[in-house]
Length: 195
Image (cartoon, rainbow, N blue to C red; front, side):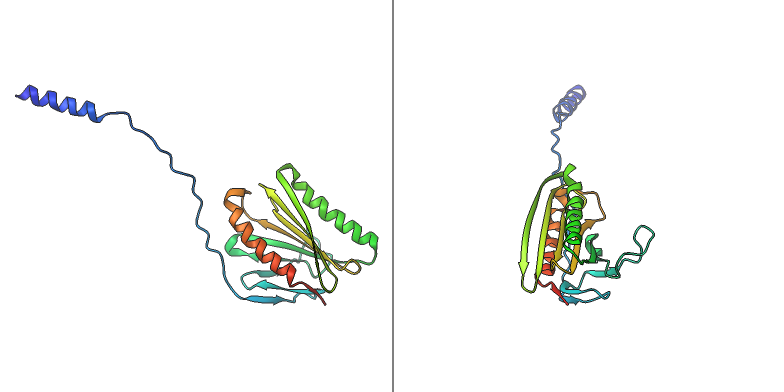
């Protein structure tokens, strides 16, 4: 009887020691809590323009640019701490077609630096009343700046913005955040006015 019990225990042990099937867990990303808040009018830093921005964006004036003073007191960042991102904003006054051409070409040069990682660049034009002309560059792929734009009146003013996140570019995990911020930027552009 003792041998039968040992034999039965060994048989049960062998049957239960089958090969385990491993199922990997699907890739997951952290949950994102998108900020909410009312719209505020941006009218700061002696800028020649104003626009509406969500209240959860903090405007921080640039006081240094590569250890020098910025060219204009109207260089600033719109920071979104809860999303770990910011929109770098610069303003320049222009006095000639040559100035405008150089600034437009510089904007395209900055955007084209992402071509190494970009899947494609969507480039479109927006024209608003009161001489608000905007060019938007949406850069798809694992790039440092997925959304850039510039606004001009084509004679006196040029304003440029670039979206950056303080994290490793990853189109899959940053995609929802980029889409969220794009909507905010488009609202800023649609409410943009020269003074």
